[in-house]
Length: 270
Image (cartoon, rainbow, N blue to C red; front, side, top):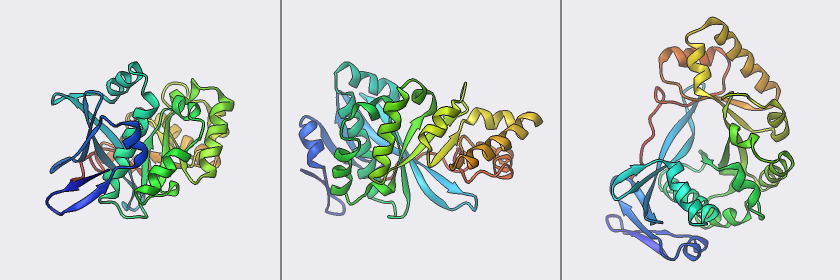
């Protein structure tokens, strides 16, 4: 199964695993949004937000789901809740990640990383721990070492520690890298940080916004970056929306930047 780009006469393969799991889905190419898929009554698309290093060089993109029903936008949580109600949550998560990789493969250089959001609950429920998705990646010319699995810090806290640790170790053994997102939102669990040993930690945007307003918060931001470096993680300042926030983040020693001041999320036309 494949989809044809009529303007370039280029075919994009749909992985057989996805074709088998979603026989009723419809893949198509949109001139503005790239590859789309219609499933569970929704139209799904991929947007990508760049992540840059301290020198402003783009080394990664985060994939973001854009979903709509009858041309009316719905939030990703709404789309996933619909899948949960239809008892297709794991398959829907794979479908979304596959859509992101298909779109990413159409424009991104091989040395750029792709950050993919995965719910920790799904991570531990999947018994093959990445082998299924690895076959999908391979069919699209990708490998696990180009993928960073991004886990929300708050969600990680709600999953059994031994189960998430075992799953992360198995994923990492296959070549995937791990990122902890929104770290510092609410009560950050340092025990989970040391347990998971993430390759990347994204600092919650609210901390950076507070650091731009208060001197003590600014000092604390720098100390938090140092703590994360000591734990062996690269630190990404998330939610950078002003020049002041960018300056604070860089002065605090972060390794990378992401946010609307750096670049907005955008579709990548095929």
